[in-house]
Length: 186
Image 1 (cartoon, helix red, strand yellow):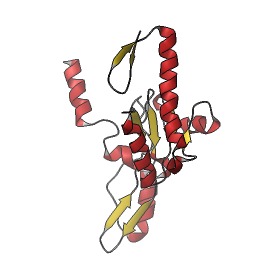
Image 2: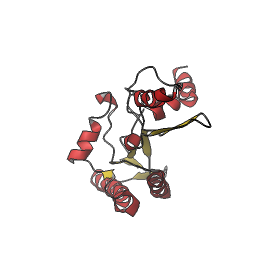
Image 3: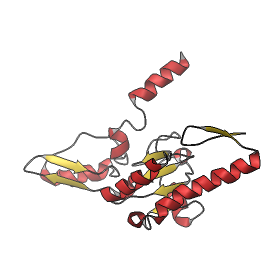
């Protein structure tokens, strides 16, 4: 049996050893995130009520992937701490902003860590500059409601439940995804 690890190496192990090693590596990465002072209380582990509740926030149950763990950053400092830990060992990760896309892999990951921006959802507007600053976990409905009293609008999604982060990055569908699909389908 071969296992694929984030370091892009294929390592042969007998089946019983491979399961144990995969679980150990998974636990080490999630344990490192959970142990970080900046991320205390912001890492959800499988088989907990909070983790299961977070899976229920996806627009489509089909897209909700059971990640090794989930990180719910609340600030830029939380994101920095998360990225620092995950890049140290090239930990695979997926991003969830609003969780509106309905296909697997568009807003999370099964074999890695899902970073859920749901708590980074504020919008601000500076009337002097005309600039709206929107965090990635905001949903377009709340953004439109926030800027409306200023008699301005922003260009965004048609549906209020769509997340800003996914919409602005193509909802997981980038030019690279499209080109890859064309190449694979001939």
